Image (cartoon, rainbow, N blue to C red):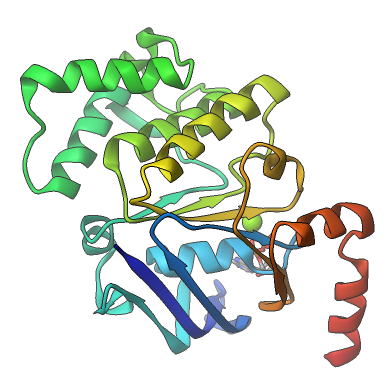
Length: 256
Ligand SMILES: Nc1ncnc2c1ncn2[C@@H]1O[C@H](COP(=O)(O)OP(=O)(O)O)[C@@H](O)[C@H]1O
Ligand SMILES: [Mg+2]
């Protein structure tokens, strides 16, 4: 059973003029396989920065702390090595990959992560099944990744990837944003299928509470101004729904 440990993680973003802007002010979080953690916070609090830093985006500079997956130092790994170690990031804004079809992209990703090509005999069926479960038109397999996809299609493609790659830890950055209620349900069912395998730890980053009606978190972490300011169970999400983030943002402003 896998465990991701984030300890006192401090991160600055590199600005185009070479300056550094501190964003994460010491984040500590442990995610075990089978657990679902919701990170909830207002816009600009650093949620995507946390996701990108753990995934290894070069724009973010780690200035302190550590990230460890099953005893291995994640911060010492390249982005590819992180993926092979079992880390998966569904981006808030999935990028287009011109000239690469969905089918080729997924096969290449699966080959890279597993260290060997998936069996030709079974792969086509697996791909078709995963797309069907996410209500993606099979014809989309031949389209270029994310090119001309609607917001909902991009998010469903991310979940298809997650189901096929079977990561140890998956970070889903605002996978609910921009989805209508039907797409939200289909995407949530996909996330729940992965959760129910018990083999993946989920870090669900979200601004709104509505996805948590479909995906029940075991733990909720309130994230404000680059740090976790409160932690609890699913009841904390209900409290946020009712009260919003203002109480926390006011406290953070007073502290700074
Ligand atoms: N590449 C960047 N250049 C400048 N500022 C950035 C960059 N990335 C993030 N930031 C800043 O860091 C803060 C946190 O951003 P982000 O992690 O995207 O927050 P969230 O995902 O919670 O909305 C914001 O103030 C944002 O403007
Ligand atoms: Mg974000």
